[in-house]
Image (cartoon, rainbow, N blue to C red; front, side, top):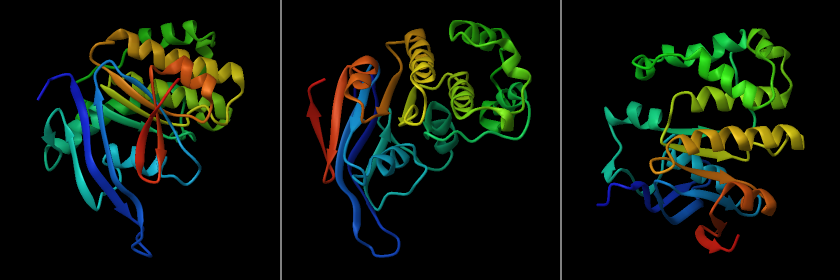
Length: 227
């Protein structure tokens, strides 16, 4: 198995709990280090279900998901979730100062070996054209766009190998959306041969900006599409 293959999904499927009908079935995907993938599809096609399944946040009813060629179970799950992070379009922050929220990520057992780096956060804010005073504001006082930026900073400061981004800019103004794209690009360019991302977006122009490969989910099948 080549080391540069990060994650593989082999014919995975998921049923609806209430009805037993298939929401996803027979979906296969291979994500290699260095890839930036845009994922599109009609509403209800299962894009969120697919990303949450790949992140092992939701169970699958058939198929197999491998991380670096090995199954993910037992003691490997916490480390997997440190290396693979799923982000929804609506940020969820703790009720505290922004800096406290960012620091709290390192209190989780799986992240305790990593140090919080305030200098890195301040540099990111400068690159994004944001004032350092943002760190002293309470999360409940942030706009939706500001909260989303904080949620992405909270994720990328942990230096994951794979980001699964579920329409992270869908509800943002163009300026904030651009800042989100820039922040994700900063994370990727730090180790472009070792990291990868899947970005769900309905915007063809955004697909061309953020990705080098575009997939469309149709009736449980991933179809390669031109950017």
